Image (cartoon, rainbow, N blue to C red; front, side):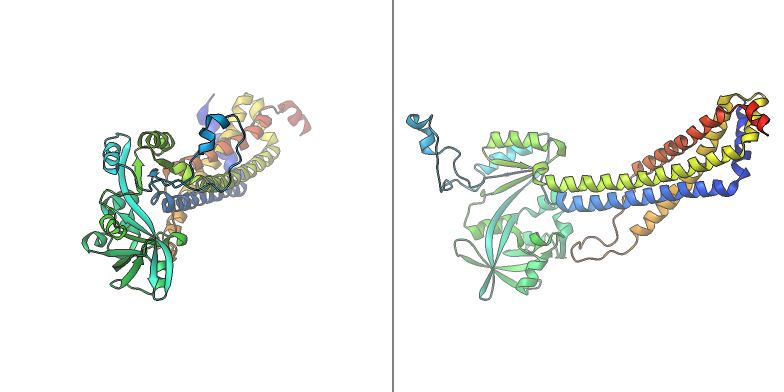
Length: 419
C-alpha cells in the first residue's frame, strides 16, 4: 500500500468539494465546543454544590442519640419471651447526650492512621432573644482551628474574623440571616437563653454564610470553652466528634467500627448525603448524554457528506480500482477523509471550547445565597478534553467506515460500462 499516494488522493477528494467538507468540519467543531463547554460548566457546578455539602460535612460523625430502648422489660422476661408484644407510647430512656470519656475517644481516633483529622463540637438548642421574642436556634461550640482546617469554616465568615471567637471572651458568630432577624451588627450584644432558662450576653464578632439558608438562619458559633460555660458543663463535655478520613470511600466501614468501639452512634457521609449524591450523578449523566448526542449528530453529517461524495465520484473510484487499487486502498482513502475532518474540527473545537469556558468563568455571578462565589463555576479537568477528543475520533471514524466499505465494494466494470 502506497501511503503517500493514498494520502494525496484523499486530499484531492477532500478539497474537490471543499464547501461540504467545511460544513462537516464546522459540525464537528460546534459539537466539540459545546461538549467541552457544557461538561466544564456542569462539572464546575457539581463541584460547587458538592463543596457546599462536603466542606461542611464530616466523613464520620460520632454522637449519642436520645431514643427508646430497643428491648422493653416485658421482652426480656422469660415468661413472655415467645409471646407477641404490643407496646404503645414508648418513652426515650435517660441516656446521656455527650460522648462518654471524650478525651480517650479523641486520643484513640487521632492515633488511627486512616484519620486525616477531627474536630470536637458541642451543639445545643438555644433561644436567641429579640426583645420580647425568642428565636429558636442552635449554638455550636467549636475549636475554630480544627473547624477551619477540616471544614473551611473561616471561608464562610463574611464579616469579622473566624479567630475572634477564640480571642474575644464571650463572643459569637451568627448566621447572617439570623443576625438580620435579630437586627444586630458586628460589635453588638445578643442574648442567648439555654434550655434550662439561663441567660447569657454574647458579643457578635462576625457573620457566617454557608449558602444554605435553612442552616444560616438558625446557627450561631462560639468557642468550645464559651459554649461549655454557657451550658454549665465541664471542659470534656462534647456532643459530637467530627472526623475526616484520608479515604472518604472507607467512611461506612470505619463508622461501624468506631460505633462499636466507642459505644456511640456513627453517621457516615454517604448515608447523610445519599440524596444529594444521587442528584449530582444524575446531572453529570445528563451532561454527558447531551454532549455525546451532539457528537453523534455531527457524525451523521459526515456520513451523509461522504455518501454523497461516493455517488459523485463513482467514476473516479472505478478508475482507481481499474488501475490496480485494491478495495482496502479505496476504503483507506475515505477513512482518511473522515478522520481528517474529525481531527481538524476536533482541534478547533477544543480551542473554542476552552475559550468559551474561560469567558463563562469570568462572567460575574453575585448572589446572597453563595457569598464565596464571584463568577460562574467552571472545571478545567483535562479528562473532559480527552473524552471530547476520543469521542470525536470514534464518531468520525464510524461515520467514514460504512461509506468507505461501500466504496471498496464497487465493481469498476459495472461503473465504466454504465458510463
